[in-house]
Length: 202
Image 1 (cartoon, one colour):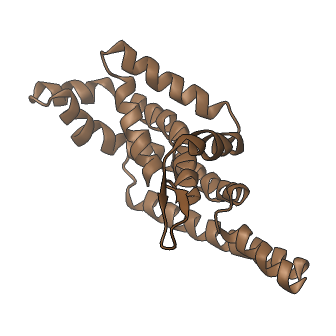
Image 2 (cartoon, rainbow, N blue to C red; image 1 turned 135 degrees about the horizontal axis):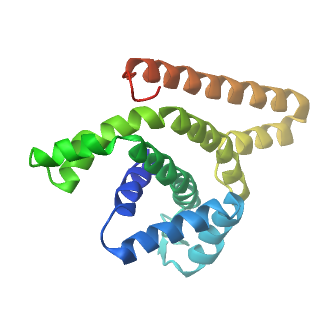
């Protein structure tokens, strides 16, 4: 969800008249699209995590203020959000200029036109690409294993380390991911059909 918010906000900022904001968004997209997500996660957890303050826990030990789960959430959201910015930008460009001008002639501000007219139409065009990016994001969550986040691969590893049933757990893990991705794809396809509008893709 956070990556979708980043995508919507970033696509809006790309059309800003304030050049430094456009440059910032372009730099953000280029950085996160052109570097491996695992390297990004390590950067957040080890580099930024090392300079964040610590707080005492229930037994008086110092623990990081930002947990490994939060760093994984931030890293994955920014990674997927960079792709979503470009996905929403392409959807916005697919909306006819005449539609935007009609909204402006009715007195809509730029933000109002984006929120009430352009974004709903662009979202319909973007849904297939968003579907692909969300599927990729689900598969990328396994990288959180590298910083100790207890996601499915981490839990499976704990089980096979205790029970020595590597083959069984890898098969279970594979089936779980197939089921999860299949459910997401099915839901997104239903959403696409529900939002289909003649002349605006999907």
